[in-house]
Length: 530
Ligand code: TNX
Image (cartoon, rainbow, N blue to C red; front, top):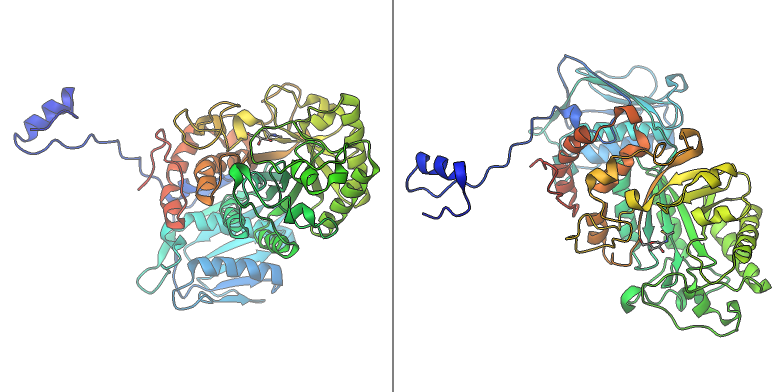
């Protein structure tokens, strides 16, 4: 009898149960049963379960949208696509309607009287119908995401749709919900390794499920320039032609970029473009000799060092270059912000650095946008409205706040999704430590540093730097399950959050991620639902 894997009491039990059968595998405790309500991430502000029956969704369920208005209808279509039958994407029907709402329908209503704010919603599920009410379209979209998480995970399979034999129940409940922070973001570094339009769209889809609303694209660094700039074409033809490790790199044409912006808009996500400067600029310096103080273009760079490059802060052409780039970028950017980087500059004095940031800031403001920069920019005089993205764990954000800036909380030891989970994680870096699920979740932006509170925090953002992240599957592996942790910190009230409760709801995401084909990391401390 092979029993070496079962020791102690387990061996005795196995022997007693049968003298010839192979020992039972060591049983992991089954996850406690979760009511359907206990699947929602981020946890809503208020949830009141009803004792009544559930609402049954089937192929005949109508989705009624009032008023009959394009943006709201689009949200109805999103829901209809999710629960539509295999017979056709238009069933269940989306009806733009006024007047009476038929029994048994899902009613999405834009209603100023709902008083839900810019992104909040109310979701009421009763046996005879579902109502999602919101003041603004974003709220309707988030209400739909909550309803989606209450539907069984199989609705996420492309090939499986509701049909007569497969209708599903959602629990009767009333939810009133809205975000704590306006900025609930993630960042993709498409410079160190280029990631295609389709990969970015996939990431946007996954962000939307967790009500995240900002995707920051790190579009230029030493190893690559990834956005076509018509007035400086070498940036992409030469500067975009490689990446870390020497691969072929790539770049977004203006049309590609507009496609990403529009795809994001339909998911209520704003794209925040970053052109990192004055450091992290080797790709630009390699593309145009005149941007270098000595007039000599360096070779393209495919390593992973930081801090060695800088634009020539004394040359006028540098500021004409920035002006052209920002002008073109502003026309592609519906959002309020352009991110100018500003991190890790080792080749300038503090005075040179500060003067540069102030000139770059003025250029962005002249083109009608506000500035975001990494926390080093607080060494410069910040204009009203400039936002500081706090990333260095050992630096307090208070000096930036003292200048009147709002903060995006991105402390590297909590939010950097390119940090390894454990020493065994094959991908990623570890300079800011190992970030397991508890570390990613069990902190709060208002208490991480002394001297700050919610009023100085715009929100939370989780960057994925891509020195080691070459493929979409790598992005997914590092983002899941930690991205939902960051999403909940950014959305849910602090007093609604606890790690134990979150980890149960997290475990319940597994079947949905399997249905969506997400390459998530099965963190051993989480009881993953089958
Ligand atoms: C620091 S975070 C950087 C990036 C690296 C990252 C790797 C920041 C503003 N700068 O250039 O990619 O660490 O984790």
